[in-house]
Image 1: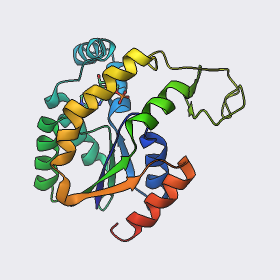
Image 2: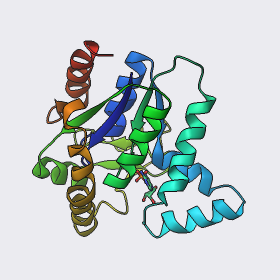
Image 3: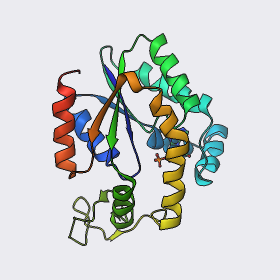
Image 4: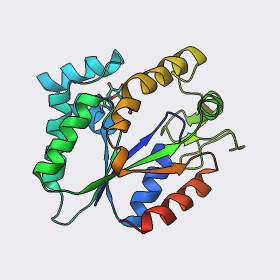
Length: 209
Ligand code: AMP
């Protein structure tokens, strides 16, 4: 069974997603990372995608869906996937569902649920490694990255104005997409620490994966 992972910015989606994938042996499709990889290629498409990402716009749906389909084709038979960062809007949800149905891949959706206040608090206080880009919550008290020892900084787009815009985009575009999955949706309370949320997710998902 594949999982489609949803969560407002600050829900811990990336970190908890990696833990869930590790626990259940799922392959992660990380949409933003896959698109950045494409954008780094010296090709006409690569250059086009790079411009779109740098402008902060969404990459056209056909391009994203082609990458997803290619990713699925490279996996060994029997692999299950955790989709992170897709779908971002209703149109994309319809395309993804159509593709998964065509490939006869059953799926469920998972929402890591947090309040807007929690999202705001976490986004304005989290830190990121200036070198390897590992993200640390406010509760992390060391001043250097645990992985590569570089200094920590805040993400350039984690300022109140940009955060507001991103949270509004989530409400406007992603919430209606999540509603399409209401009969397949599992909600996980995301208010706890990363470890608590991951444990809760693993316990809840154990029954269905
Ligand atoms: P992220 O790493 O999720 O912050 O995504 C980085 C950038 O990749 C976004 O600003 C978009 O330009 C693009 N992107 C990520 N996910 C999607 C998606 N599902 N559909 C279209 N574009 C996306």
